[in-house]
Length: 266
Ligand SMILES: O=C(O)CCC(=O)C(=O)O
Ligand SMILES: [Fe+2]
Image (cartoon, rainbow, N blue to C red; front, side):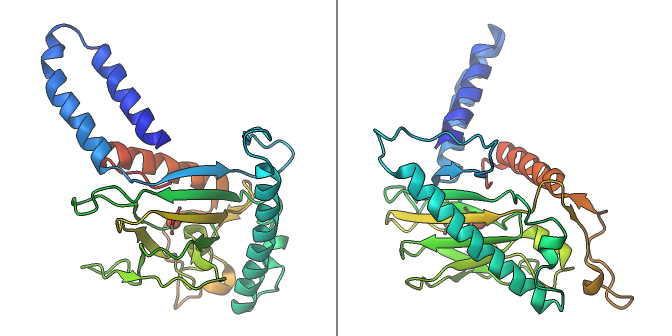
């Protein structure tokens, strides 16, 4: 929602800055604004960033939403601890020490964040190209996703094959859906592949809570020695990359793609 408003503001400021002759184009620009608003993802979210001392989270007042902050902080801590345990299991599955990613510094003040999501029930989902969240993979190590049981989430197992085949993800009460992120895919040379997913609009209102575990900002993400060999060389052509540089680049690409395709997935 915020993005849609920003998008509209940007277009309107462009309209206002036009010279007299350019005003002729105003009509087509306005129809483009409408098109953009109609096509961008319909989700809206409330974000909670890292709880580290210097965090920049802005909380609603205790008066407006009593116990909101303490509830969010308690959830954040618990789900982060669950995420770290899962990451230890990933390390064990790779025949590494269970504290491998801790020793690497990835989980020392990880860039973890919480996204509380709402998908509207009253959007015309029959319109082509209108998604709750369009197809993407998450950027970090792992995502722990909690949903309210309303369908809509789909995964594509073979993300590089065409045509893409999408499957509904069943919701299990009391269970998290765990997605592997792109940085984990890079680290493991695709042994753990990031999950391509999207959220369809079903006409029913939907809520979900995604918790993204991203490595510490200074952590270097590169193909792990144990995940490559002469017969299985690193699949990524890219050199090792600092976690925060990787994230920044992904956000930049997502913003560019959104400007071109009217979509955003961050
Ligand atoms: O709402 C969902 O089920 C998925 C959300 C998601 O994929 C995301 O926020 O990255
Ligand atoms: Fe996602």
